[in-house]
Image (cartoon, rainbow, N blue to C red):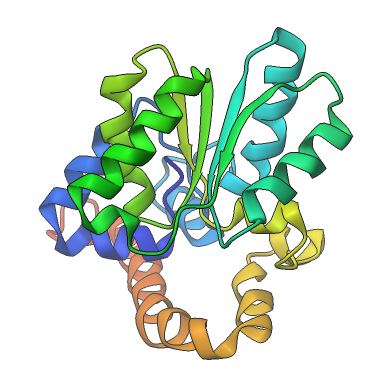
Amino acid sequence: MTPNVDICRAVRRDAALRELVCSAEIVVADGMPLVWAARLLGTPVPGRVTGADLLWSLSGVAARRGWPVYLLGGPPGVAAGAAGALTARFPSLRVCGVHSPPYGFDTTAEGRARVRRDVAAARPRIVFVGLGFPRQDRLAAELRADLPDAWFLGCGAALSFAAGTVPRAPRCMQRTGLEWAFRLACEPGRLARRYLVNDLPFATHLLTTSLLTRLHPTARLEC
């Protein structure tokens, strides 16, 4: 799992989501505020690791090792478009399935079961699930029972980035923690409330609390 500020905000107020994140074998920081907070606490992480980057790096590993991958999520055509981009870069990559399920499929047991059957039948070693948190991660948790030898990555908008249907921020903005501003400029109607009303205050609180905890380690400060 690749938590960012928005995921951490959700996890802080929902014990079930916190348990979902903690159930992952590997958890990395997808968001520069999390990297900065870790540094302020004196417990630095190696760096930012995004689902969008892992889509490419893990596909490269899969291509070299002959592991089949499955792309699940995104609007109609996005998973297929992402598969085309990945195989163009890694010609030996084996994509054993792509599926962009209709919105709301996971609100019914029948809809989830149908997708689970399709993915399980393809026998992938890596499944990239781009449905957004927590939908993608809840589905991945169910799929683990069907494919115990596979790895699952909840990758959010990574499939849309790879397919070219959504632009990704320039590298300089990614490195300086401004990728959110680029996305906000591209999709203000959808992301303004999330980034400005919800995430920005939480990130400010997180960084302030991390600094105060570092300066006063015996104080009881809630993050």
